[in-house]
Structures are given as C-alpha cells and as structure tokens.
Image (cartoon, rainbow, N blue to C red; front, side, top):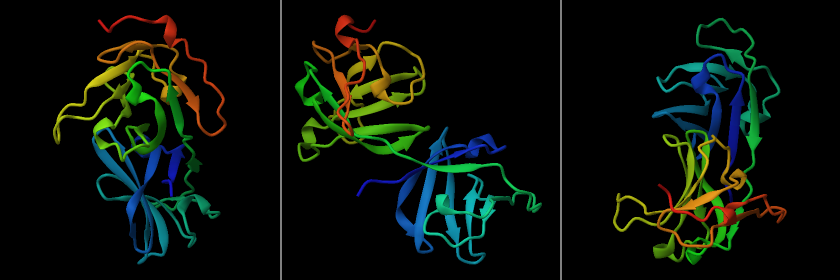
Length: 219
C-alpha cells in the first residue's frame, strides 16, 4: 500500500507549509505525518488527551488544532484554529492529499536506469523516487532533488553503507522543478548515451523531454 502525502498551505508560520509524509508507525491509534525540510521536522498527529488533531512545530508546540475525531487530518470539516497563542482564532490553512504518480524511465544507455519508479519519501518538499525492482538490490537506482544545485539527479547504489551514490545523470537546468518528469534536458555524469526519457505511469502519457539533443558530459 502506498504512502499518503498531505500538503499544508496558507500558514502564517512558513515552516509549517509543505508536504507531510505518512509515518510508518501510528501515534495514539492514528496516522502521523511528518514534514522533513531544512533540517527540521514538523508533525501532524492526533492527541488523545485533548481529542484533537494537532499541527506541531519542530520545537514541540501545537500551532494549529482541530477538534473533530476523523480518520485522517485532511478529513476535518471543523475549522482549524490557531493554538500557538491560545487565541483560538481561525487558521487560514488548507490540507490537501498529494498524489505522486509512478514514473517510467526508458531509453537510457545505462540500462539499469530503465524501470518503473515510485515515491519512497519526501525530503525538503521534493519526492524521492526509487526503482521498483528492489529485489535487484545491487542495481538499485534513486531519483533525488539536490537542493544545493537545484538539479534532479539519477543516482546508483552506494558501494558501502553510508557511502556516496554514483551520479549517473543530472538535469541540465537549475530551474527548481517540482518533479523529474518536468525536466526537459538531461546530461551525463557516469551514465552513458542515450539519455533517459520519462513517462507518467498512471496514464502512460509521454512527458515532453528533449534530452536526446543534449549529448554532452557535465562540466
């Protein structure tokens, strides 16, 4: 079963805006959601003592609360309230479930890259994809966003635990794109010609990609 991702928008506390990932374990009998961004973790979780959903800052303070006992926080129909100052004022925030379709990568000269990819996690509000053929552990491939260079990277498996993953391909542009299927040009690193092409697995519509016209090594 795939993870659920919830996006919060509209918070006056900017650190709380972003994409929260469903955690592995339940908290107080309900799902917990975590936002891992810029080295800090914010939470959405159910508090049994107060019978309310809480959006909790990295410092452990409940910033927003909602008092309806629902299965998941985005199902709340009662207004979210500001709790950080005990004012109880309405909070102008929205919670929306985000769906990340699987991606299909094909035509790459480094053949282990060619496969179906699913979202493994969300870090710094960007999805991190992993090759679905994980039974081939030594051929694992990941697609990550590098927030420093603002490039999407296609990486292989590290040679040892905690080691650096070999960079196979990276997006040519440093435009901050939401997902790697929006990339219109890839360049080589240790990968080989031809360059990868992306499709959305949900409807198999080919995403515009002109990577084949960019056949040069990085740098």
